[in-house]
Image 1 (cartoon, rainbow, N blue to C red):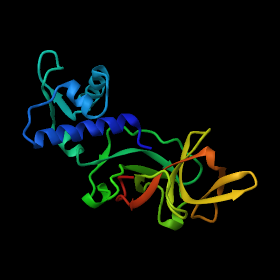
Image 2 (cartoon, rainbow, N blue to C red; image 1 turned 90 degrees about the horizontal axis):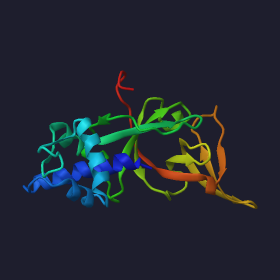
Image 3 (cartoon, rainbow, N blue to C red; image 1 turned 90 degrees about the vertical axis):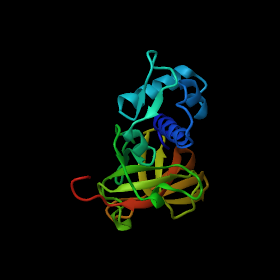
Image 4 (cartoon, rainbow, N blue to C red; image 1 turned 45 degrees about the vertical axis):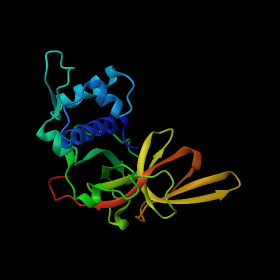
Length: 216
């Protein structure tokens, strides 16, 4: 699942890019907030402040709330980039964390989705999926999907421990009810068999990016 703060801020950047591309005047804080589903102008202001501090937008006017919100060059680039949202374990579970403002520019076919579902990047930690050519330091393009078919490589959140892991998904049923088998692609690691209600599938891995040494 994409962290809500990132989703909201990326939606703001994309809205500002669309407004500017149409040649319309810079919107107000309230208008930007409404465009991304925020009811409170104060909440929209807080998000825009974070974007401004990170260098994605600039605001003019003495009150800094007037119709003066514009994308910077960094903001224009980010509107077409995919944010690196966190780390994902290929081994034991590892909490997914937001990773600052880091982002990677990728080819359009990686960013786009025929389903219209959001995509984001996670960096792999560990070697349990090496048999699927997913190694420590690789970047996974994850498409949000809560119900992928069996055999899909997924990012899954294990409830209770709040840990996210990448494994191949299989659904099973026994006398106790439905379970999910999260299978590694490495003979040194064992399957994780977890009650279905304790797992939230965050999305499916659609591409694996192998960064050059030094960017991992």
